[in-house]
Length: 169
Image 1 (cartoon, one colour):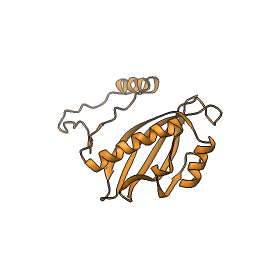
Image 2: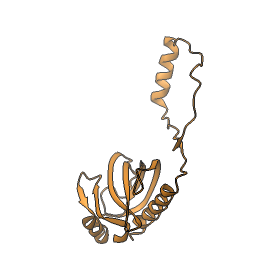
Image 3: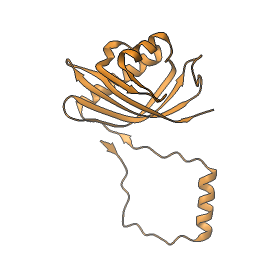
């Protein structure tokens, strides 16, 4: 459940004047504005469990300790490099060091259960690839969708899709 401020739909509106509109447009182009994200409020205990699993997984990714026990038997990822990678291949890539992160931060904008055995997380993340890799040291902004599935009584990462939206130079 996302918490958002509600606006009074009955607020008075005035007709825009041309000078004011031009100034507002110029200001909008000159000053980068960061949209305020609503606060994510999670009351579902299943989703809270998966958020904790996700937090531990992010720690493991940064420390280079991603384990086979963290991904499901059917895990597959649509990667930011435009490839579809099954779990075993992804684990091998991490083990070989061809995928590694100096840091990874996530802002989860959506977290909800879809039945009793599926939880979906969506949001934006900023990854900094480790030295020696493409975009090493740069902040790579990505939109992501992660699906966790209950497998043998344990929440495991089952599906991932991530797209690069910006690379800071």
